[in-house]
Amino acid sequence: MSHSTAPLTIRMHATDNVAIVANDGGLPAGTRLADGLVLRDKVPQGHKVALRDLAAGEAVVRYNVPVGYARQAIPAGSWVHERLLDIPAARALQGLPMATRPAPAWEPLAGLTFEGYVNVDGSVGTRNLLAITTTVQCVAGVVGVATQRIRDELLPLYPNVDGVVALEHTYGCGVAIDAPGAEIPIRTLRHISLNPNFGGEVLVVSLGCEKLQPERLLPPGSIPVRDGRDAGPDVVCLQHEAHVGFMSMIDDIVARARPHLERLNARKRQTVPASALVVGVQCGGSDAFSGVTANPAVGYMADLLVRAGATVMFSENTEVRDAVEQLTARAASPQVAEDIVRELAWYDAYLDRGRVDRIANTTPGNKAGGLSNIAEKAMGSIIKSGTAAIGSVLAPGDKLRPDQKGLVFAATPASDFICGTLQLAAGMNLHVFTTGRGTPYGLAACPVVKVATRTDLARRWHDLMDMNAGRIADGEITIEEAGWELLHLLLDVASGRRTWAEHWKLQNALVLFNPAPVT
Ligand code: CA
Image 1 (cartoon, rainbow, N blue to C red):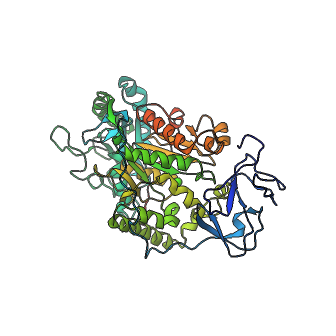
Image 2: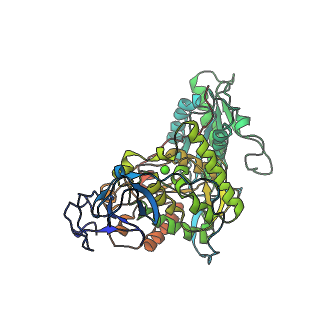
Image 3: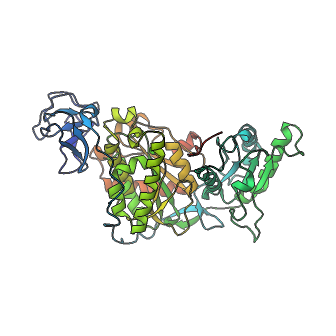
């Protein structure tokens, strides 16, 4: 237990030749472990200790896979830090096991519900928000002023509306808008404006001269039809000749917001099955406990949600790349396995253009937290996806079809903000985020449930973390109990309970993934 003075190490698999130290503050040299092994070095919390003598060149095994190769002989009881390890080569994307062991069909999990907002296209919101879509960064300041006025003057009149969100971004002009890859930021913006938490109301503010014209952002047919007519997006153009002076722009945006707010305000939460949930899972500020506590709890919850008929998305290309073999084997069909390979091959080529590879992923904080390299980080990261068959794959910026239920690999960068932005575009209505080092991450468009990997973090960040999975390492609850607890927390949050990030109004920026050039 990390609270007691008894030394505690955690080994993930019987074949592992290293374990991690669980105790707060680590363990000093000379500590005798339960099995009699004596530490030769001080080993920090979350870091690895050699359980037996390792020869130079021998595989260091954690999660039953090599997470590195010893650069020199490492005696039993030594601290196995990153400088002692060479990283394994990335698995080639040829000759992979394709859909060789998808999970069998499971017993459905019936009876789980939440209180949500049903949209005309059949999707369900967990929040009732007015979004103001923008075509270009130039309008961001004006939209910011208008949004504040809507908040101050209009929201008190529409108490069923949870808030107003300005969809600001850096795209729209000064970009090579016809270059290969430009379709990604464009479709991302289009699909975010249609996120289930915005109720199908689309209000656009455009400058007028930008490359990303409103009809390119939202072509005919992209907005769900209301009352039998496709009126297209409601657009306020700042350069329109009717605008004389700054206040006329603000007045126009505020006036145009009214009918949208009226329709949103008329909506009521209603009981819907948990299958309406579209949960994006992500991690950030990871440490060696991420793959031991929080991510396994999220994985167990993901399996429960899949059994309940919901959609669970996992992402983060560079954090799954080293586990590609496990993912293609788990694909529901050879076609899905090929889709996984296609997306990861595209991302390999993208990284290669910048003369890096997936090794560029890890941070100083990851390493301080005990994660030696991306191979070790990936093994802990993919546990979030649970054990279900991978039913489909989304390219960056793509939107889920209504029939894409179950476990989905949404191929995105691992950057917290870019991944969250792309999961919003996919149609995420609830976000689960695990962290070991700690991050105050939050989004304006969607509730973010944050899960701490360690009790020490949960204690210090008691009003930022929504759940403490560190209790698993402390021996207080099992992974299964934590998974159920998280599932019930998600249903509560989906029904309107506020997360800490919502309480403090912590909202990170939308960050678009633009692999195309700027001009
Ligand atoms: Ca991340």
